[in-house]
Length: 344
Image 1: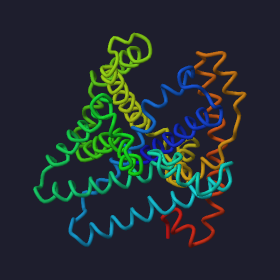
Image 2 (image 1 turned 120 degrees about the vertical axis):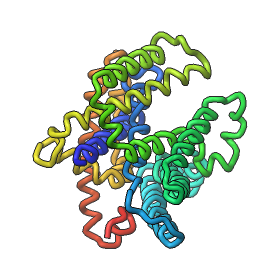
Image 3 (image 1 turned 90 degrees about the vertical axis):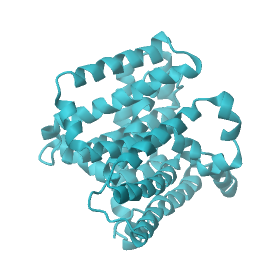
Image 4 (image 1 turned 180 degrees about the horizontal axis):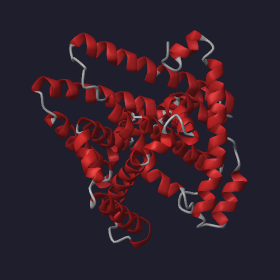
């Protein structure tokens, strides 16, 4: 599925664009025209793709396979993130190294490097249910996992009941809060892959795409403008917008898959970014430019969605280019290639 690698590359560019606007332009999320919109589907899409690719129909689950796979993921997800986090602190932080490192580790977002750590937790939980699913020869355990993941996600949006727990040491160091927020998208991606033939027929039906587009418009309109659902209930329109926007992106890349092959300019570039997502994610925090004057201009002329997106994505493409360049230099070393990027 070449279009899937291209979509993963597009998602990585969205992630970098968001961080350019947030950290580089220092835009206010309450004023920015792009930040609140991008945040709705950039990370959900990333975890969806991770779950989609996690399913392997020919896997034979046993103790040896489980332990070897988990050890492989541990090396890829944890060691590189810790190394680049330390490099980021040395090169970009103005505070004392160990103070900053401790502050990052105590934060659920780990100074931005939370993704790989949370993804490792997702793989661990998923592998258990995948083994059970293979044992019983049914997708029912994975469906149950999705329902449980949705229940955990709902708990994140109930601060009155659970808010006192989110700032305890366990939740801060483990980043479980981020796990709760996004795990259901990972499992959804996995279920879509398991039932891909049926999902494709659904995508090709006359009514489904129209319905999803309408749901996305109404959900976004309510979340940003109408506010029919308020307080904790605002999560209804937000979640609906997240799922519908995610599905629209997947349908778009699949529908126009001929435009995203390696034989096309945009397809080859996006696929290249797609297979280097780990490298770019680890490096882009270090290479983000500081341009607060751009954010001040955009905030003072908001809403200006097109200009906001164009500027953040333009800078993001430059950052992605240099991330790939630095990655290629580091990959000259077999040691760095193996232990920083998981490639032998």
